[in-house]
Amino acid sequence: MLGWLWDTVPEPVLQRLGHTTTPAEGAPWPRIWWCPAGVCAFLPLHAAGRHGEAEAATVPDRVISSYTPTIRALSQARAARASSPSRGEKALVIVAVPDAHASAPLPGVTREAALLRELVPDATTLPSPGTVATRESVTSALPRHRIAHFATASPTSPCPPRVAYSCTTTSNTRSPSAPSPGCG
Image (cartoon, rainbow, N blue to C red; front, side, top):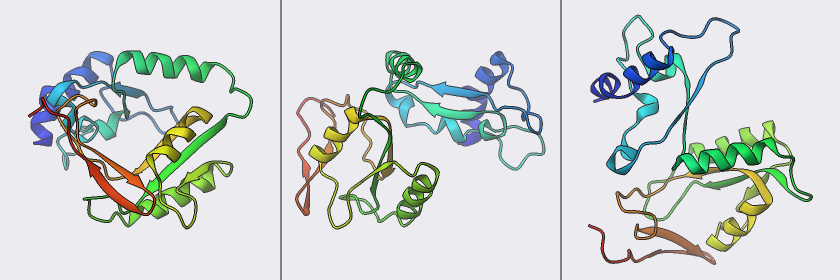
């Protein structure tokens, strides 16, 4: 599948942008922002390629991939980055949930969060020791931070976010909220 995906989307895009080889040693890597829509949002554009071939025939061989849900969101994020932080605003909040509801445990989440804290010592980490991340704690932290890193499993849905299934946490229990009608 990754080979077909490479041939269909990323390779033609990277060719058109002039990203045809691995950047030279010491040269900056180009970044590309993928903005897939609809069911294409489920495709691993960042991993596409003909893996195992000698030439740079994969996305990771040529660029650093990022995703944005909309062009407007990317534009607003880039504009906010250009401005100076507000008083009291911190750089990073890390939301690390290795045992999300209805998902297999993710043992690498704890290490991932620790590595990020080493890189950004003043980062805020949720949940705090001895607690669980709640919708309220996460949403209240987001406006006070310029960057949010989520290290957790996430359910996926082809539905718009307003009707998609979402998992919430309250206190020490996790319970899924019912999906809104109209998608399916």
